[in-house]
Length: 163
Image (cartoon, rainbow, N blue to C red):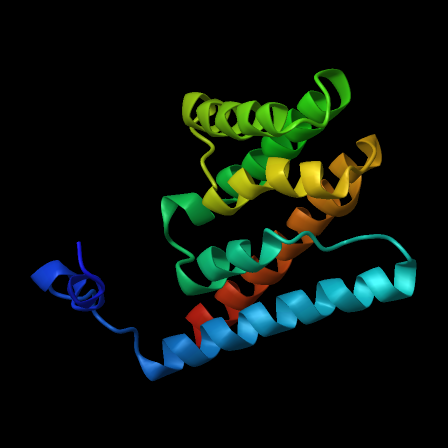
């Protein structure tokens, strides 16, 4: 497949563009969520933010009704993938093949449990790159993702009552 063909979407129609107000609200929500978590991290001295949260914001604020954006998928997906990443890191070792198995196991587990949240699939890789301790499950994974969910649902409630 050529680059030109890729750019032209293989001749298929592009998805419809969201309204400017939807784009603005997604931008605002995502920006406020990342800013809030970054400020909380700075003020508390705890790591509230995780690299995959940027991609979670794409889903939460850009596609709030998508199945991958639902609370169960968001929370369980992130926690499972972090738990699997930490388990492989601590019990199997910090090798490239262990990281590979952790990533594949994370995906398979999300599929089996029907908790797929695509950004969470990067958590095992992040864990292998940063090598945190078990507290990573609490901060940033669980606490950060619950806070993100709270902000996303608050924004959704406010914006849907305004529209």
